[in-house]
Length: 493
Image (cartoon, rainbow, N blue to C red; front, side):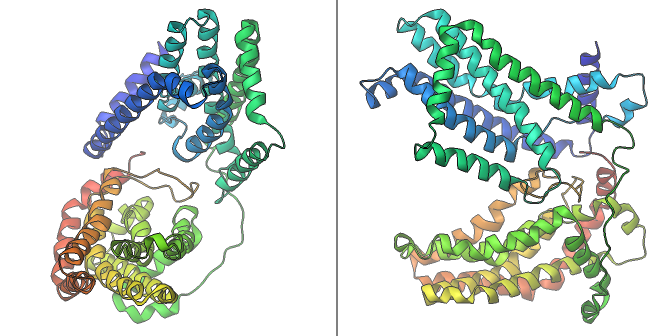
């Protein structure tokens, strides 16, 4: 009965949310992606037996599959850590009611067992298992194998939540997992310890003696109970009231005063970037952005692919613009209502964001000047991309921000955190990246490289010239959406 009640509450929360339209849009998109992956895994499951028979003609396909389970475990664990989060529901209102905390925790953990990450492998496991039965393998052996595979998927599911819980406080929380999985892979690859053989032998032993399936079941139960203990320990009304004590570092940021009326807002943004875990990640990602070109430019295979120069130029000079700008004004969602109740000019508020993003583009294009070592065309492409970012992409980012309806928790883990991400963020990549590449490529292929560069520069210059009109128009859109955003930011995602 309680499970039915929990489902009813989540259903109402979803349809009464201010971001319903955005949530539906992103869920429809994710639905198409889910269907794509299910069909792909289904095709893999059907074709796996003949593929393995052809690739390893002297080996049993069933045995070969089991040797790959170790690699599946490593890959699945990494994918889940970056993309799978523990299912959540608004539990604080329930904690004041006559609802047992045990019931809430069991529901959340049970809901995680129905995760797409757990169901997806079955689309490959079941067809492959049925193929084995049709090929006259022992039916009981195959059924036990399929059950074992599903149990392993659930073990990875709950192990992932424990890893996330332990590493949640670290901004580089993904590094230990990468190091551990990389070490295990390396030991196996260099045949120091054959983990793939150990896992394979263990699975085959279970299929030969079905009673041994109690071992993975015992591991699963142990992980479930440990997750239950961790989650229940956090399930208190005042669980989030205790905060860490740390030294406060202050800065008057006096140099920002030269920007006039927008200076107070710039100071807020700079303090937000420096003091909070989530936005601070946008600064760390600058290092990745600046070095991004080194993945392509030194490679002779990419020297004649001039469209890449525009793509990389847009990316390396706009990495901060993209990462910081896509969450405007959600960065201020925690105090947005208070901010909007003050006697301030909305245009000054937006202009401060524009100045901050423009400044970042200028700094980044200067930092990336050494890329001229790989050719003068790269340097020119970066400068053209910077002008385009300032004259076009800054306005695209600001306009898209008027559609943001997702609140952001600034103190959540920064790395690979998709909390606060909605349809707006997913769709922004089209105008930000694809449009400039398309513009450059059309003129580049039709006329010349120089024509593509001129096209980007012209687009950017036009935007800069029309700055006042564009900002006025964008400000009107924000004012129109002002109360919808206030209402949305008051809600938990």
